[in-house]
Image (cartoon, rainbow, N blue to C red; front, side, top):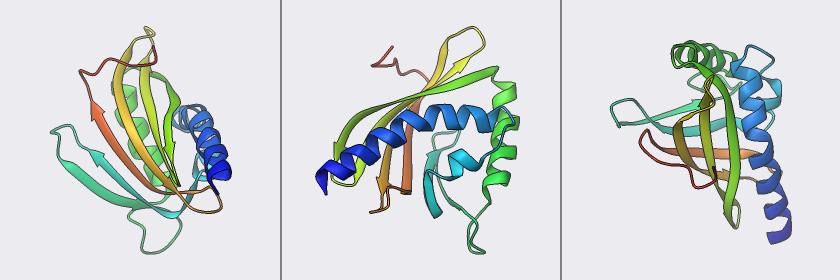
Length: 142
């Protein structure tokens, strides 16, 4: 399973940035949604550094749908002068991958760096997404 998990991690990390960028620019959210199981558990930090846990999916018990996630995120990103997201895989351990993600503004500057632990299932879909962000972090990759 190790080789297949490494392939899944590589695919997820390569696609996450471009797919998130497309969704946040108002294009279809389908490619981004396709990376995830439904529902997916998401753990983020809010602007106060507090942990926020929710689920996204098509199930009735999900906290929000992918379209709702897209709309809520787009509004925030417009205020941040968002241009695109870059993502890179930093390591793989079994069915988990550590991904570095950076938000880039229209001046080409990285204004948010996050380190994301993704856990994926045997089909290569993300089942848990835990983001550790730091506005003052410098990127390892650029």
